[in-house]
Image 1 (cartoon, rainbow, N blue to C red):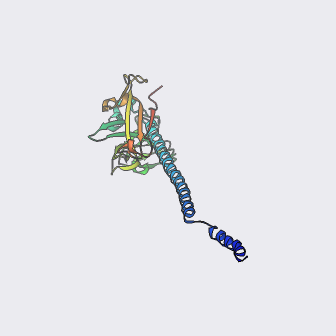
Image 2 (image 1 turned 30 degrees about the vertical axis):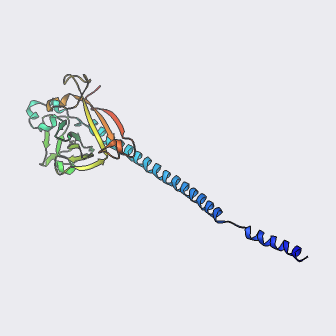
Image 3 (image 1 turned 120 degrees about the vertical axis):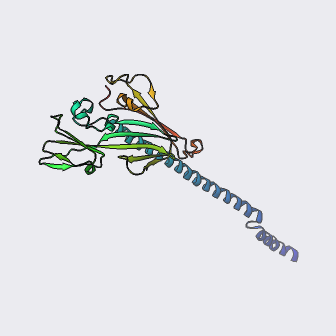
Length: 274
């Protein structure tokens, strides 16, 4: 009788001892939890890397858009001197025109990089109702032209001196802009003075091609694009082709986070092409 009464009690105690988690179950649970945590971390890391790559690609595209837009605007403003055509001025006053204005575009190739030099007009809508004076420095320009657009013999040009301005005169400031690529950065300098300043970084390559006419009277491009132009060919330039490569690792574009991006644009020189 006694042994029969104790059997249920022993079975109950053994059942209580077997209840709950054992060491093996605990290790399995920790392993599964660690795997889940690592999976979540990998998802976040992958998302961050994707965001970084997308931002790098967007930055390259934005820099390229700004660079090509700026160069295109500068090139389109070449040979724009308001009501004046410097190539058709009377011989009596052509000697007063600075020789640099005869070549509004030039491209010299140095030992490491080429320098693109442009002479463009600075937008100016000033109206004069009384006699006054103006100089190139008033407009941040290198040269200043003053004319009434009627009398070609009354043409005033200066790079430093103040010029007399009368009512009805048109003032045309001209500036000189130089662009070059150095250390994988596009640099700029104004009016041939001071040091070059960095405009855009990440430039893996920038190549220029110049479409030339067969003669000064022709308005269409003849033949292919030239890599270089001499000073005597400046008046023959009708269009400029810009080939740009941007990379987040311009020293080695193939090793960048994003694939190097190539851009090409052709710009017609204003007043020189049909």
